[in-house]
Image 1: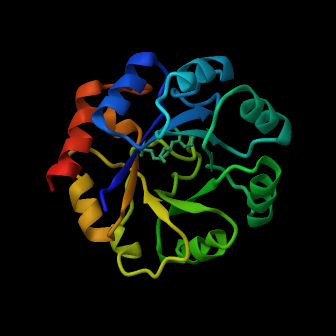
Image 2: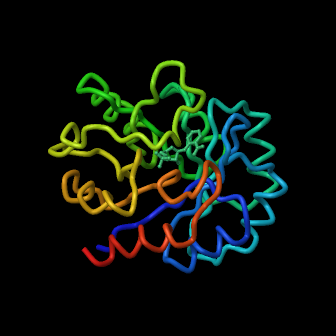
Length: 213
Ligand SMILES: O=C(O)c1ccccc1N[C@@H]1O[C@H](COP(=O)(O)O)[C@@H](O)[C@H]1O
């Protein structure tokens, strides 16, 4: 099976086109005002309306309220919700049932102590996103360009489909896939020329590296 790629943090038509043309299967739109990748709902809607059918549009939210989710899900076409905050398993289940969209729950990993949460969240979501845990006091819970020790998940038995994230780049993504067995990968800062500014050449290089391996 071909490795599936998510390019996250898209803000412009050019960045969306670059990701689609390079062959990404998922596109992420970040709704988190502290992020340099934050987009307003109206902007994300315009971008999403131009995405070809078959490429999944993912809304990334952080501890979002029902009111925020009501607005995002009603105003733009979406295929998946990515929960990237401290949502409890109960909240993940509630969101999944309320919006009828597949839910991907991000779980931060820094040490072996963090790994059991993958099983717990796997029971309530449609897929897991395994990311590096953000450093204490960081402004962003993800999108920090940090990776974690991939050996921590290299021999796991998974109870849900999952995606690898955290500090991936065109240079390290093949090794990350080899070490973890990931069939899906997610990248944001590793394909940027500045925080929040995607680089079409890096997006292409990221996906070409995977396809060439
Ligand atoms: O990208 C962001 O700005 C962001 C903000 C808040 C939560 C998550 C965010 N991004 C996600 O973080 C991971 C890893 O990103 P990176 O490749 O290390 O920059 C990825 O899943 C993004 O979707």
